[in-house]
Image 1 (tube, helix red, strand yellow):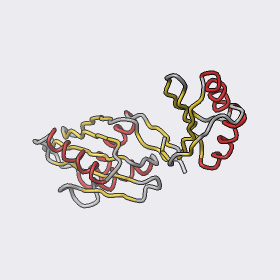
Image 2 (cartoon, rainbow, N blue to C red):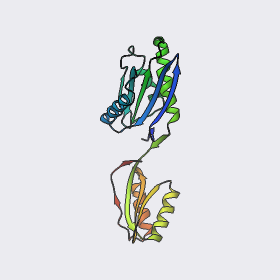
Image 3 (cartoon, rainbow, N blue to C red):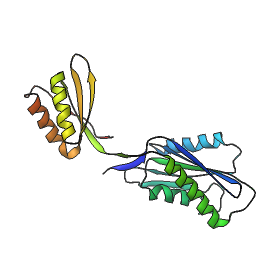
Image 4 (cartoon, one colour):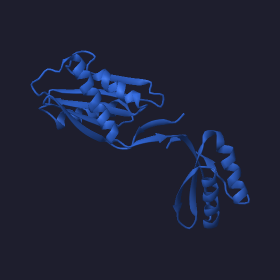
Length: 203
């Protein structure tokens, strides 16, 4: 099952009644990485009043956490999480840093502000889709590599190659198509290649 995440950190800022809300998203692989990013944002903005957060992990978005960081319960972390989840993003941490502008926004105003700051950061991010693929790898000669690369492209597969005296070629294929990839190697190398099936990767 593919999942959506972001390619790189993204940041956006909005201002509401002189309060600054800085939305920040970063890709993370683990809960520990998410908490590191949160700590880095605190260090980057030590004078800010609040650093409200949410993160989502796992291909099925199973792990979800959020924090209001001193804002009234339910007005910050939950709206941030709602935006991340609403865009079907995972392996993402969101931090919204607030510099208080002197005017209270009320619960509804806070929910909107934290949601809008997160949405602005999502809009600034490059969203990518990761697929569960298996590398099927073999050493082949240059002519065979070209033929295999064309065959892979025709099936919608990607390839990775390292060039030396011969070519170390990886075909990245869906789990269900490993046998087809093995047969493709056999056909296009007249059985000379000895392909190996690697471990599943998210690509």
